[in-house]
Amino acid sequence: MDTKILAACLGLLILFIFMFYASGLIFAEFFKLKIKNNFSAIAVGFFSYFTYISILTFPLQLISILPYVFFIYFILAINILYLLFCFIFVRFWFDTSFIKIELLFFILIAACFVGFNYFLYNNPGDKNFLRHKSTLSILYWLRDNPVSFFSNSTLFNFLEFKAFQGWVSFQLSLIMMTNINTYEYELLLKPFLFILDGFLYTAIVFTLIDSFTNVEKKYFKIFSIIISVLISIGAKYTAYYVDYDFWNGEVIFAYLIIYSTVLLIRYTSFNIRERFLPLFIGLILGGYTSFSWSNSYHVLFLLYAFIFIIQNSYPRNFTKDILKLSIFPIINIAFYNLVSNLYLQFAIFAILVLFLLILASIMTKKYSITKKFELFVEEKTIFTILIMPILFLTFSTALILSVNKGFMSQEDNYLNFLYVWTSFIANYEIRYWITIILSLGTIVGGFAWVIFRKNYKFNQVVNIIDLLLICYITFYNPIVVKFLNVIYPKVTALKGIVMLCLFLVLIYSIPNYLLNKLDNKVRKGDKVIVIKKYKRFYIQ
Image (cartoon, rainbow, N blue to C red):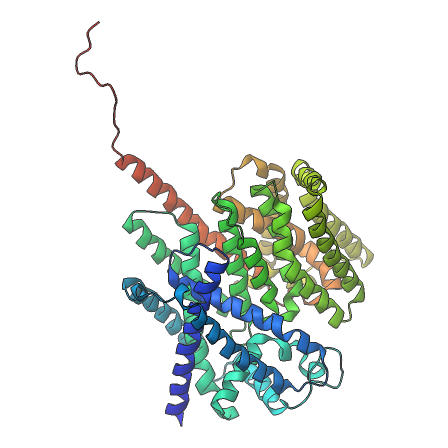
């Protein structure tokens, strides 16, 4: 029986990796995305697939009479349509030239990540896997029960958003296709997820290398790949160390943040304005609900910072990019607030969605109003960036004074993600003061950066530092988090995952930026200089 399950697992893996690869190349063609390495299209196909699962299943989640099993069959039907879609547009991906050294190189790196996944997560006593297995068992057992956001008698009341996460429903569809028992889940899911994650992660790493590295010398290319792979292994271990859940979509959510950030930095750093890239980033970011509904506000925080990075690089017509980037994620965030009974926040985001739609209508008819707005943001950049951090700091200070507590008391250590990250420091007193100094230093440095940022010419390193510091001073410093924790109690649940992802992209970008500089210097030195009208003898 074990052999049959492993054979089914391998067959499903080949099917889905092919589907993500083929659909990724098709969508890359549709969105005019520049792809240097065809295998990085696996990431395009993967995130697009779960975005469309999120879009197509959304209307069904409003109907309280539908049983949960209907969603599973619906996903299976989507898989069939996806495969038909891949074969209809076969001309975009069918190319025998892909069977070359690049394929072997990609598989070799993917195998390294698969092996590392096995080393980290193949633990029979893994609490996260046991919890995830229990969730899948409950969903399978209650699959004939109705599920809806708006009925207390459905699975949503019992498992909350788990029943609506495309990532969970996708795994349950695998279980139903193979018709296995609960005790056999581990045999199917562990190898499937280890290998799928390895290929997806490798595709993201190749996307990063293609986006940040522009070198011609082979030894620089090889060095860039080696550095990126080593950093990626370190990042995987960090995610394991801070206990991000590999099974339930938390780690995939982190991949989504990294991937969308890399694409945005590529869009804003190299003076190559890919027309449909903001729309693609907005679509895949809107698909975050397939991996984690409860992290809606983290997506909002990231979108807020994205706006200023785009504005800094493209002061003209950046409003169009904002619309493409934000409309789909903000609709999901508004709906999340409605379902969570946060009616004031729902009203705010519903008004924001309406405003964006009106703005889109105005832009098609009278663009002069939009030009005035863009000019105002350009002239008052410091004001527009700092208004939110100052307001949040003011509200948080008032809240702290009202309860007669210190600004950063040891009781509130959990609010500081830096404190969580430094758990390897055994002495709590030293750990507390180190994180306090780092936090205050970063806040001061962040405000100084915003004031003087215009003095730096934008590039991949400057833009990611910009993004990192704007996010930190606005949403993730421990003073502001104390206020945000009141209106959004789950703000600390992810242990600073967005900041970790942004910091990781910064670590990636620095060596690649230096390699670009070195390669450019070497190429200039290799050029033959032709002196025109040269005379050996000069006669006066």
